[in-house]
Length: 232
Ligand code: HEC
Image (tube, rainbow, N blue to C red; front, top):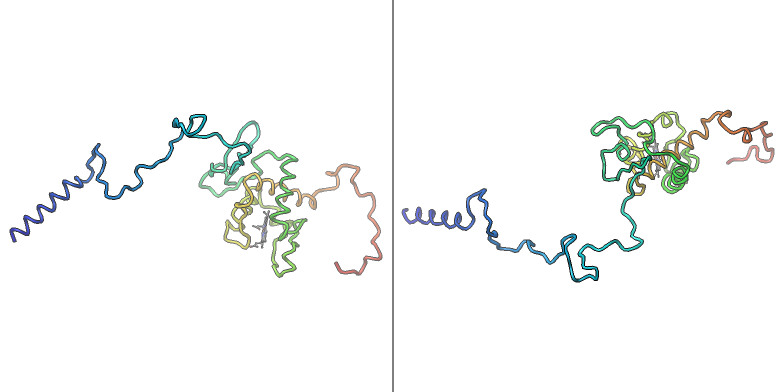
């Protein structure tokens, strides 16, 4: 029994002397059984290095490098980056942690943005929602029904932030039928699509007096006889 106790005491002594007490701080390098990649033949940023001609370890970007993400232009010289996830222009929510969506597009709507929106809409949304947004995309011919008409009053009354959320994570915050397009459309693309969807909706909701005089329809054209009765 005595030998067992002495044995245990020696074991404890051995372990403590090798490993130290818990929480002990030591300046000596720790006992290293496996090297654990503590020391690596790598270059630290901005460290001098003779390997490259310019003597720097951090090399300037190669000409023509494409950025992985684009700053979002808020207008008036202000910018926000896609990784600033709580910003209203990135999340679509007015405040962090709240579910109130922003009423109108928080970035400047320019004709350039509209064109970008049309391009992106025609790539990502048109196959389902159709070129005019009325839910008659090509997928209908392949049995995918129940695509939302974007001129539906319930869609028209969604605010811009809600549209943005639908494009970002899908409808019903990702739990609905439609999935989000955040992996193919960046933040600015998505606001651009919101702007373009608004334009599509306005094309049917606009009043005649909002249209410049020269585009007013003077008289209703007579129905074309040859097309009557034909199925479209
Ligand atoms: C694969 C087909 C498909 C594509 C592509 C698609 N949608 Fe949809 N979208 C749907 C379907 C289906 C619904 C109806 C979902 C439901 O009722 O649950 C819908 C619903 C919507 C709604 C209504 C959401 C609501 O809460 O009522 C909006 C707005 C919308 N889509 C916009 C877009 C935009 C903008 C794009 C392009 C970025 C797009 N969709 C791409 C299938 C698609």
